[in-house]
Structure formats: C-alpha cells, structure tokens
Image 1 (cartoon, rainbow, N blue to C red):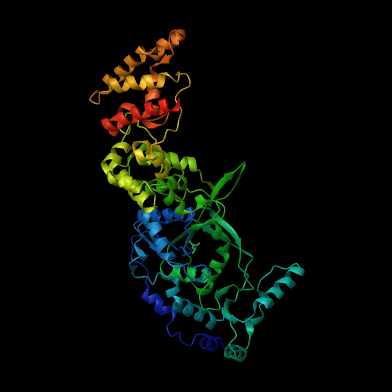
Image 2 (image 1 turned 60 degrees about the horizontal axis):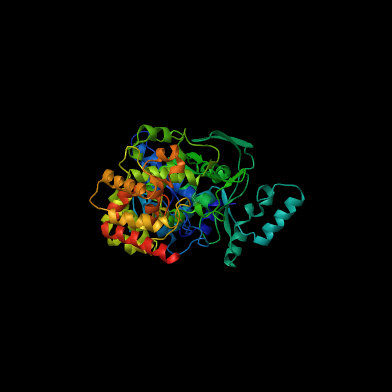
Length: 552
Ligand code: GLU
C-alpha cells in the first residue's frame, strides 16, 4: 500500500509539514536549567482543588528556574465544554495570583508558541497525523461502535486483553481504493496509531517525582483523531508539548496510566518526550479510611467552594504549599514574614502517595496568613467578597470600611496575637455583633448569677460607665460594681471564701459581655466598647435591661 497516497487522500488540504512547524516554533532560548511548564485545563466549568495544587507546582518550578509557565486551554471535547467556562477557569486561576507568561487570557492570547486553545490547533494535529499516516504509523479506521463492541465481547469471552491491536485491528491494511470508497460514501472514521507488534513488553522511565517507573509498552491502536477531526487528549498532548517546547509535564497521578501511550506517540513521531512529574492525589479521610477527594461527593473539592466561603487566596495558596512540599512548614516557621515565592520548591519534597486534605489545617494556616495581612487590606477583601458573593451584609460592611478595619484589628498586635479569623463567612459570624442589624442575643446569662441581679448589674454599669476611661480605670469600675453587688472583686478572693460571695468579677463582666455582644466569649471588652462607641454601647446595655425586664 502506498502510504503517501493514503495520507494525501485523507488530508488533501494539509500542505504544511511538521518541519514547517518546527521552524515556526523553534527551541526556546532560555538559561540552562530553566523549566518550561504548562497548565492545560479543560473548560468544563469546574476547577478542582487538585488542579490548583498542580498549578502551583508548575508555576513555582518554572519561575524559580527562570523558565516559562503557560496556559493552554484543552477544549477538544466539545461535549464537555460549557459556555464561558474557559473564561471562568482563567479568572479562577487569576484569583489565586497564578502568573502565566504565555497563553490564553480573558483579553486574548499572548506568546509566540500559540494558538493556545487546542480547538484552534486542528491543522497542526492533522499535519502530524498526516505524517504518521504517510509513514505507515497511523491509519483510518471505519469500525463502528457496534463492531468495536463485538470485537471486545469476543476478546473477553476468549480471555484476551480487550482493545484494537494486532490482527484485531481489521482496518490496519484496508486497500487504498476501499478507503476511498468508504470516504466517498460518507462513512465516518477515526485515525488510529498503528501500535508496534514487535515491541518489548515493558519500558522504564524516570518520573521527576516518583523515580524510575517500569510500565508495559503500549500495544493498542489508540485513536489519534476522532470522527470530528479533533485530536484525543493523548495526541494533542504529545504534539503540543513538543511544539510548545515544554520541558516538564507536572500533572495529576491519574495520568500515569496513560504514560505508555504518550511514550509510544513520542516514539512514533520521532520526538523526545518531556520529563514527566506525576503529583499525588488529594485524599479525604472518611471514618478510618481514606479516599480520593471527589468532584461528585465533596463540595470542598471545587475551587468555587473556597471562593464562596470567602477564603483569602493567599491562605489557600499557603495551605497548598504546605502539602506540596514537606519542608515548607519548617521554612515558614523560620521565615514567618517571607513571601512564599522566596521558598525553594523541589520535586524531591513532593509526596508520592495520596495527600490528606485537612479542612482544619487549612483554617489554622489561614488564621496565620490573615494575621500577616494588614487590617485595612483585609477589610477591603471582606467587603469585596461579601459584595461579589451577594451576601446581604455587603452594604453594611462597605458603608464604613474604617469601622470594619478597626474590628478586624482587635488583638492582632499583642505579643501573643489573637487568631480568630479564618475565612469570610466565619469572620462575618464572628464579628456580627458590631453591627446592630446582625446583633443577636446568642448566649444566656451565666446560671450562677441570680436573674434579678442582671438588670441591677447592668443598670449599675450604665451609671458608672465612662467612655473616656482607659482599660485599667474601666476595669476598676467593674470591680467596684461587682463588690457593691456581693461579688468578689478578685477571683482568688472568691476561691478562698466561696460562701461569702455570689460569684466574682468575672461573672459580672460576663453579664456585661453578653449584653454587649450577645455571646459568652469575645475579644477584650474594653476594646470592643471603644469600637462600638459610647452611644451604641449604652444602647446595647439599655436594650439588655429592657429585654430582661420584659422577660419577667
Ligand atoms: N486537560 C487535562 C485535564 O484537564 C489536562 C491534564 C494535563 O495536565 O495534562 O485534566
């Protein structure tokens, strides 16, 4: 069979050769040791936390080495694509501060190795497929789904590996005229790789994270171009990484099983594969076992979840870095204020087995990260997030950013700073009482304080309260109030002689705290009152007295 004629029959419109593309996309001129990495999201409208995790690894390793990090949109599967999804993915990545040097942006494309959308690269794939056909390494296959199913059933019944290979690949050697006739009669077909039947059974490859892997050689005539002429992930991947001059492919563990196919394709095209680095998958503990963080079952697998909950992008980034590199936390302890970009990221410190995603740990990391963000910036972030996510509190927060800033700054400059703030929704719940519209009496007054004492103590407090008091003078007045009502001025006095008192000054301040904040626990009361201001402080106390009297 004349493979050259077959190639012309299948791709009459393709005039360019792979060499033309080689010349158009020359080897990059970069310093020695520079990594060229990429992210290839499919625009399905869903971005998994694992995608961001992999994105950070790619970004760090490229930029740290003086290389290039680019964004390619892998949109060859139109069935999976949702409108506007590519833009949504780009915006989601941008939110986390991922800087791409090349690729698709919301404003168009930049870079000399594009187009960066696979759907715009159809001719490139067809050109490389044409070359494979002309060399006898690929062929058109007209087998229908029903025929493929029948072959599979027969193989299964005979205990053979299912798939198209060897003499099962019936259309490997269709005569040229038969191909022409089928095409003319409108039969649809795919282009398949002609797998080597003489290959050794296994090969070894060095994975940048996992070390040497031994894998079975591909024996299947896998699809390169689908019936619509679009490439499969495998064929697009190999062609693109080559022409875009990717040096390292850092991708999820779920792709390891495709390595034999990718290596077979590089071999068929006579190209050198990049270095593969397969990251560990994110896991979640469920009871005593661990399982993959699932798109279907776990809302926290989606980046949208963090956006909605109001996690600061730096917090998510910091958390992912702690699980990406095992020495990151040690580095952070030694460099508490440093920018994460100054940490040296390595593939040696990346996990090879599943990584446990831990929401509590994320919150702890987040609390530390938020402490490093100035209160004014945090206030702006919170107000923007509330507005963006359509929270009803948004206008309240926006109406006085300075007020919000003072609230968020409470206890942050102490020798042992407070770490109360983790993410937007939690922060709003935590600081709600600063806003009259959000204030609720959540906790009851302490049980050891007789009910009749509550209005008495609050009334006395209202009389003695002076907003000009400093912290010490304020507390002194609370002590006096406590004593006057039969409560010990110092907890230790109460401990010594519990029978002499109804309680101690702590109980009295709890009554005041509940009246002011609606809660048993809060940051420093004196500080809270300074922020609430005199009028609101007095109104809260008076309101609590009224409510107590009304409840009788
Ligand atoms: N388009 C693939 C995906 O979204 C990319 C995988 C890769 O990194 O090669 O899963």
